Image (cartoon, rainbow, N blue to C red; front, side, top):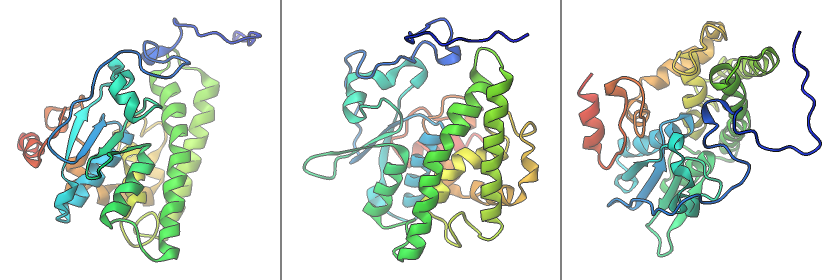
Length: 284
């Protein structure tokens, strides 16, 4: 018989019941130690880790560079969230929410800090004029799906991913609850992609760049080891979309940046030039 949990009158943090992330999760915000962020030679400074949210930005930057946008050159500094590096005073100054990724654009007299992955994608698309249509109808569709992703991915990551892969125990109710929601989301995407080459139409956009690291990696079996559990082969249009995007050179380059796990040819702690990525990919 399952133990019934009765919420206390006033909640208090229990340090002994937080799973893999217990050492860094706390109910307060702000810096926990003093340390400045490293700064490279390029105007764009990215502070991140190669999680799905981090991959969005490095893929976007690599896509811009592939188009010949030299001004999109960047330094990508690893912020190891498992070690709590997102709580340094330098990082909190850029992003008071202490979440990766965070970007500093030094091309202005007063540097611009940008945080939240969707906001960074939109900022870069508008700054460089790529992957966001000018036509109002098409632009609106891209924005619809970008915001859909920003609202939906927490159910996949913090919901399904946490309880299925990271929680200290596997509990039936939350796994069932978030599995149902993730499968509903996959069904939404599959029906949309049955009518479109890319998520917002016939053009590759920041909507695809936002979605692929989460749902593309998921259906390709690269996230949470849950492809069979979720029966992802049932979503054939998402599968088709995920595969064609995975074949893009910029996606292959961007997905390894600030990545600290996986095979040797899939991880690169810090990126300061194209040669850093080339050196890793040559190992394949």
